[in-house]
Amino acid sequence: MNESIVFFDTTLRDGEQSPGATLSSAEKLEIARQLARLGVDVIEAGFPAASPDDLAAVQRIAQEVGTEHGPIICGLARAVDGDIRTCWEGVRDAAKPRIHTFLGTSEIHLRYQTGINQEEALHRIRESVSLARSLCEDVEFSPMDAGRTDPAFLVQVCALAVECGATTLNIPDTVGYVTPQEWEALIANLIAETPGAGPGSGIVWSVHCHNDLGLATANTLAGVMGGARQVEVTINGIGERAGNTSLEEVAMALKTRPQFYNLQCNIQTREITKTSRLVSNYTGLHVQANKAIVGQNAFAHEAGIHQDGVLKESSTYEIMTPESVGLSQSRLVLGKHSGRHALRVRLNELGYSLAGDALNQVFARFKTLADAKKNITDADLVALMADEFHGPEEIFSLGDVQVSCGTMGLPTATVKLLDRQGNTFIHASVGAGPVDAAYQAIDAIIQAPNTLIEYSVHSVTEGIDALGEVTVRIKAEHPADEARYFGGYGADSDIVVSSVKAYLAAVNRMITAMGYGDQKPEGQAATVKLANS
Ligand code: KIV
Ligand code: ZN
Image 1 (spheres, rainbow, N blue to C red):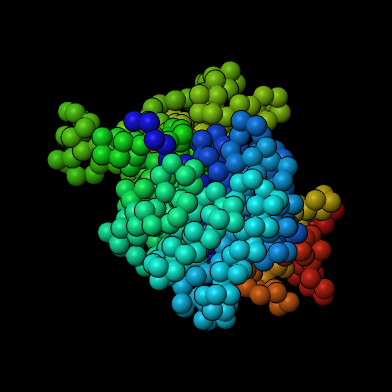
Image 2 (spheres, helix red, strand yellow):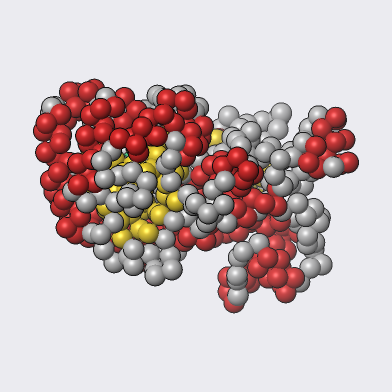
């Protein structure tokens, strides 16, 4: 086995295009660091021309993660002069920078999106790829909507891109339209027919598939069978509409079926679960329970006959071990008598190195949890770390929350929030249930209009004393702005508390991104302020 597959991760670019997945610069940087630990070869860090914030985030990732031994840092640019130059500003500080430029080449895209003909498209490709190559040694070109582009024109486009200096040719199925058989044949044909880009030319062929028909992983692997040696993927398969190909599915297919694919890759599969949770927590995009590799049920055996088989011999129903994707099976890890040292050692084994104040902070949370819950498992510790450290900037933080609910009387919640100036706000509200009441109290204090789009709660482990993880998505409704979506995550043994934390995280993200920070919109002071020091 000597050939390798290049893993090009676009979680921070195509993935961030999922509705509700807006990430702050600090969150992008942390995800990029984790992607480097996961072993991805290329990080597409963003679309620098999209906004000054996007440019700044790409620059920071280039400087801090794009080190000599780190991954290639790539930025996306439309095939226009300004985008390409801004993209170069974004990635130039990386030890290994890449410019990725693209243009729609299908008849539909040419006619309805860019309004140009094939000849003009070829002219644009010549100009843009040549400009990119004059700035950067490593240039990727994508003929967008290749899956619906005339194959003969596609050969012409790819040959021109190579002639002008492209080093990677990425073939996107932008709308998730193709079938695996068609895709394998198309890629094999392009490699055979494109002058200057065949085997031995040094050109890397890549595939980028969307999941509209649920075929993204199958198509990506078919592309690999056709000769592609770079795969463009995202963590948890997040991305536009139904998403992109999921990194963990392709990586585990290659690792689980080595005799079939006979290809290696640099992915450290034991980092998969941690990366998946980090991305899910930051984006607020919850992973469905039956999602391959990273879903909560991916390694759970429910049917009696399956349980019986797995207990006798795990390979009866398991084609890969939970440990191979970093899902620890250890049941009893720590308890209320465990000390700071034991916690530090266990966290270290899980990949978190903590000391000083950070360790003290987590130890205090651990002790509180251990009082409420007898056995603290690895899954509890990972959730606790996510809750403690993986959040947006706290414009408002939670002081206290108290609810009263049940069959008698109205569900009521009293919430105390603190702002960054140390002011305290208390509000009591009634609602349809305790969580609704708490959310109404937060809304009354913060006055940042939004609609709750999605709320999900699930337990981290089994048992009545389990930690409850809550993920929410909200839609901002500020009159001056178009609708935008934000996610939040919270974990606690009390699900009302996790619910409040998740909602507050989403609201903090919203007010940071939409610029009304801790100054409430004009004329909308908190309706009830019981205390304000
Ligand atoms: O789906 C797509 O075509 C893309 C390109 C920009 C590569 O994301
Ligand atoms: Zn895409």
